[in-house]
Length: 408
Image 1 (cartoon, rainbow, N blue to C red):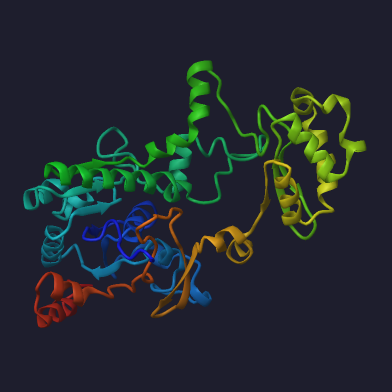
Image 2 (image 1 turned 90 degrees about the vertical axis):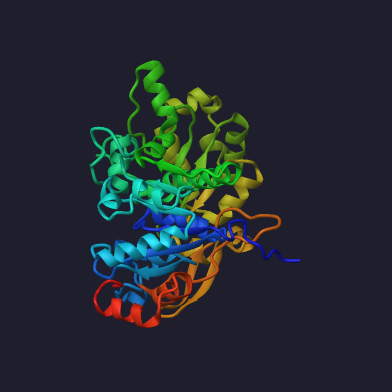
């Protein structure tokens, strides 16, 4: 029998977060069954709503694929927080919520009258998370930044790229996608468990630079213990060779290979069919391969060019050689058999974009439903329903406030 219950059913989140990490945090909780109400404004829309890619290349606040993936299953209400009556409505919504989430700079929520000190007086058991870049206190608490700023400040960007090039970064706002939302979702669930046991809420001050530091464990330990500052090394590994990305048959097709043991090295030689070229005695030891990694990379690349990347991956994996075909976005969507088997890609019908593709979560439960159930909301799509059904406001008042720019 298919599971139908969701583990966070009955939890309501007043979601002031926008752009990346905050939106992804509440998206994960929505996928677990929480009712997430996204509080937005058409005057200052979430920047993701205006971020590419757009469906069919046509811009619009309801057409961003980036926004859609980060906000699936949520509901949207538009409130102008600069209006006193708008702030009253926001407080009424918070009073009926379990969690308040925001990733603004410190002080923004306070200026609107919905900071923790204001809200805890209204609802003592509220769980309130603030996800600013540097936290709520300290000499840099007012600094504003995005994912790339965080990778720079934490040293992640310094470590990323080729040794003879400038720091390249990760090609995306990596902290927004992995360390920060995952840490935030974890502590929110922990706070809900604590509240259930004790009746006490929490103020959670998460500085987004700090979860990102968790990605740099070896480099930080090397600096602390050995006084050594690691720098960019491209695809090279300091202990093992070969360890890199090698060309395959076709245009811009590659495979990543990492050899750690002599047995893996011998298997690689045999699969590539190059014992005369790669079977030199001096390369039979890890140290010998490490010293001549540059020459090995050229010779291996000359052999891998004759292979289809997926065929080579399967052949090497069958011999326990760590490797993976380098796939592009089209491959991941349409050619990845493992993701297809796990039903990772979810297709949902959006009122404006039509059928769109969404990520499911990376985990599955044995007896609970997880994953996006509804397409991302249009801007303000649920304003009337939330105001009337949840807050008990008359339809006429909602319409009047919308015309006055309060619910906008």
